[in-house]
Image (cartoon, rainbow, N blue to C red; front, side, top):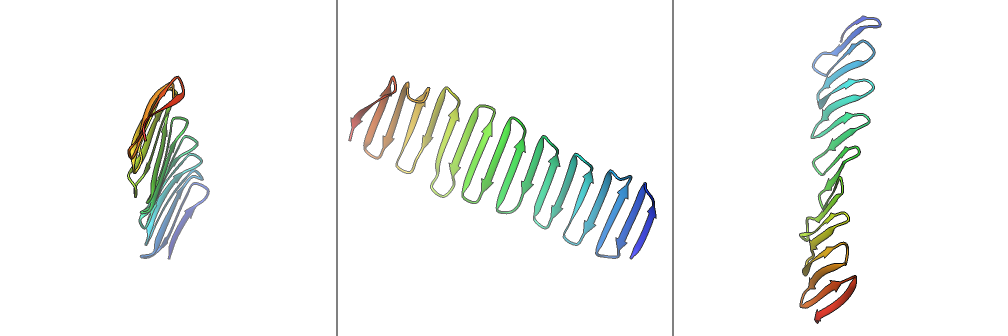
Length: 154
């Protein structure tokens, strides 16, 4: 290994062909190794990649963690997104979206005005969550007027 330290402002620690870590003041650190890298600017910024996973953090407002099977992104206070192999859920301001990838079902909400979506056997929409609305499940159809359901066909 090769190490150099000028305390407390600089340090470089190297294991030939394996890893390298560099410190500049106590607030900056950059590390590389066989599987990835990471850069940190303490206490607010953290970036890196490890094999096929990565992370980005700008504390306390933004977080993004990604791997081959899932991803989580949060941008406070306006955006939240969670995705895995089966589902997607996203909240942005006053909208919400959810999707089930395997079945193709989805729903969208625009709070408090409207929501609509699709299921395996039908679809629906609502204004003000039932003031007016329509739904179809197979051959069954319903309508909503002033929050009262009205069956149109069975």
